[in-house]
Image (cartoon, rainbow, N blue to C red):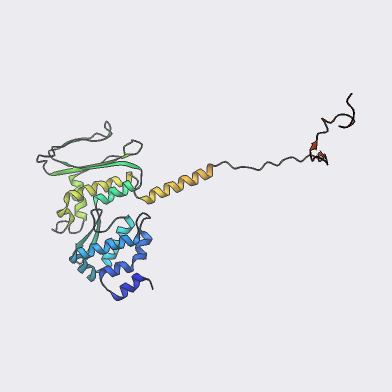
Amino acid sequence: MSISAAVAKRDNSPGAMVASYRADFATVLPEHIKADTWVRLAQGTLRRDRNLAALAERNPGSLMAALLDCARLGHEPGTESYYLVAFGNEIQGIEGYRGVVERMYRAGAVASVKAEIVRERDEFRYDPAEMERPVHRVDWFGDRGKILGAYAYAEFKDGSTSRVVVIDRAYIEQVKKQSRGSDKASSPWVKWEEGMVLKTVAKRLEPWVPTSNEWRREQLRAHAEVAAEQRPTVTAVPVPIPAEAPAVDTDTGEVIDAELEPEGGWDAPAA
């Protein structure tokens, strides 16, 4: 029995349960995250939030589902990258805006990611037929008004720009309605509206930008396979063997070239 399993047998707390599933988390965690460190971070999140810990005791399945999703995405639980939110009688895992952007950077293909909220008093212009990127001017110290929408794009390391995605208020409301309990005070849409809008537009950008280290590793593997296929094949060329073996001087071991040997042999007097 492993140490984590032994601890779980003596202790039925949510923290012990998380430790007992360490092997399961390790299976889905990306290579850059150590399973032991990740488990301790998850346990620390439960210790800091008593309401979350109590809910985990009542509904441990919801905690495990959220943590497995968090591990699969390569985030630290209970952070701005991945929230653990108490909702009704279960724990809901929510990837934050920062988490989506982190996965884009983690792939190694982008130099920068820009996502901004557009408000009613901002100056915003974007015409895909004429402009590579939007023009957005903001009075950062004035009243910008209500949220109208948002936009996002990425700049790749070669200087090119990804597809620019733009969402309006109607699309934001549509996504919000699909989120269960979005009108309740505990909902992230009520507590962190700007963050949820930024996450929404970042998710719209995701199909156009590589994400996660798994993508990068897969690209490196594919490049290695292509290079191996293109590597020239070396074919052994047989060396012709003369019909008659050359004569060898038994005293010196040198090969005697018959064409250069003078008539009568090397011992014959010179003419």
